Image (cartoon, rainbow, N blue to C red):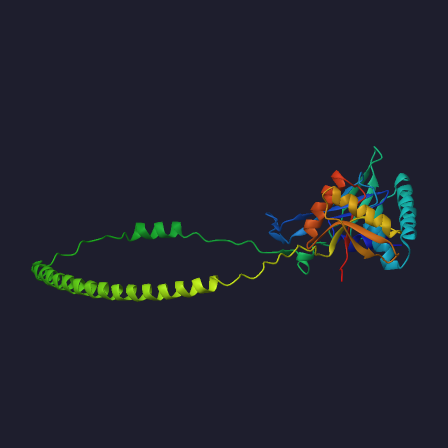
Length: 312
């Protein structure tokens, strides 16, 4: 079983992939950047890290392997445990374990696992098809020195123009004064005309408003239709699983317990093994579900896990 293949598949969709008994792969989004010296542009990506302390089985990797290989959940879990034991034995012997397209593992002097991530694959789906590229350095020419040299050779001199006879200004001022007085009279006549027109329009609008008020009063006297309330229905393909039960009565009891604690618990049907699945809540986006999962693991149940399932 190529464990790194399944881990790589899940890293495209999840920010945390836990290998039971070994540790968890964490991904953090890194923005696009430019290398100052090489002028290389790098697209946004997921930066991988490894946490040896997170070893609890959240069911994500095991469920995925069981689904892909068409094997029972317990069989998939046993295969993971067997491969983890082999990896740890090789590390103890001083060997370097290579996970293709993910990174390599070694043991330091304090017997702690050291992870060196690989940069061969970008697990951020938003950057699919984008690769880094190098741009030539942009050189900008400065012309300041050339302009200063030209000014020294041929200085620019400004000479005032001769003033012409100002007699024509007198006639222009008189013409402007006559036009201004004529315009004032025309404007006053125009304003009086507009005022009378607005008054007629206002009287007509008041008459129409009175007719509409009488008609509205007649309609209001009729009985109003009954108001209907619609209850919010949970929707979304991202579910935080609280447990799966063989006996349906136990699943009903679990739903009641979680609702008493304030969760929007419900049953989402049977899984492929015939178990009744109970979820804390369902969400439309993975980001909302991931935040709720962290909170539930911290406050209520460390074994809760995220299920992506489209309901009918």
